[in-house]
Each structure stands twice: as structure tokens, then as C-alpha cells.
Image (cartoon, rainbow, N blue to C red):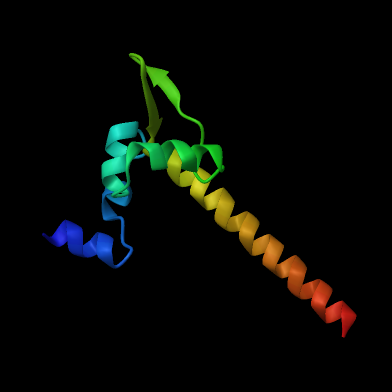
Length: 92
């Protein structure tokens, strides 16, 4: 029950609790994010998740790769916001 409560408030603790080298399948990732596997595939297509690699015919990631991808996206968003604000200030 605690797990569902955390997901309802936007906290995905399982990913942060796993070691960086832990291998996660597409099915496991869909459970962690509480989404259908098709949603995981679409998130990859949109660049929200990194591409997977195949292991025994299954798409997999390591926790480290997932977190690194997320951190890079957050840094890029921060840089874009700063650039936007700088442009706004230059127009004033």
C-alpha cells in the first residue's frame, strides 16, 4: 500500500533505491512507473527514456543509464530556461 501512495504523489522510490548496475526489463520499468509497457515504448520514441539494449531477447536498461538520461534531460531543460530568460531580459 505504501508503494501506491508514493506513486500517487509522484515519488518513484524504487528506481532510486536500486544500485546503478541493476538491470531493469521493460516490464519492470512499466511496473516501477505504473504505466503500460506500450507507454514505456512511446516514452523511448519521444526521447523521455533512453533506448534499451536486448538481453536474452528482452529490452533492458541499467538504473545508472536511466538516471543519467534523466539528469541530462533536466540539465538541458535548465539551460534552455536560462537561455530563454536571458533573451527576454535582452529584449527589455
